[in-house]
Length: 355
Image (tube, rainbow, N blue to C red):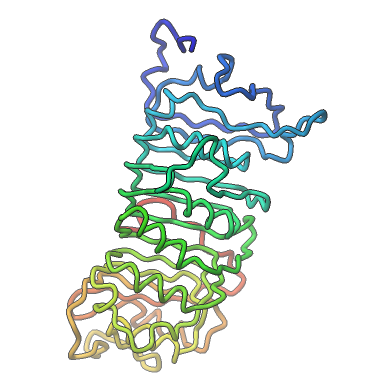
């Protein structure tokens, strides 16, 4: 293959690169071994944020051949962080990822493409029996994907170093949730195949058709330290008769944004799960005991819950007098409300949510 550049260039010292191609006619060659591809001109960065045109405009009028993702292997080998917005041919996406041996963080956005399917046969070549290996990957984020696309992708990868899984089932950025079925099998199969320990789990915009699936996920992830449920629909009953210190002994942060219920009885089930007592009817003060006297020692440091108005709770009184309080062991507990017509909380993709 022709050398990329015989002489050093000033921008070869760059460590990260962000490119967005939208509203342009894509004329990249279709052959992987082509020397004319734009990617040969990229500096050997360690971090790439690449947004490619939507697949809708990438069919030729003659033979309807789909433009595939072809990035040189030597460029992919350097990457430690890849953020890719691409709903192109899934085989070419997987084929590119197989050369990312150094990748530690991967974020994929599929634009809600209903025709995107990841199955074992979509890799250009033979898929290894134990899956597409990403040996160094620690963080995996999937965005704007159908439940079937997310399920298919998790079925074909092997991530032995994975610590954080961040999945959004939002099809398009308008607040529409996807009905999720079988996600428990997807996660637990990935863990068994990869022999990894997921410590941070974030689930956005999911309507669980069976709340027991979420319960199974939590029971199957005893190594979790951080859990975020953002705009997820499930029944709080899954926490009944369970205790955090028993099934999630290492959990430090639990956040529920746009809680699926504001029923006090349901919220009490959640509080019982964490051995936290909240008096919803009376004002709090530093002199009022709002914590159970006898409780097990748990790792929990933060419990945040936001609920949508209207709610059968006097939040004005609650927020002014004790919406934020602490267990005696120092765990911070906060309940707050957001206006009913407020847009859903944005995806929290930065690392601050783990603090």
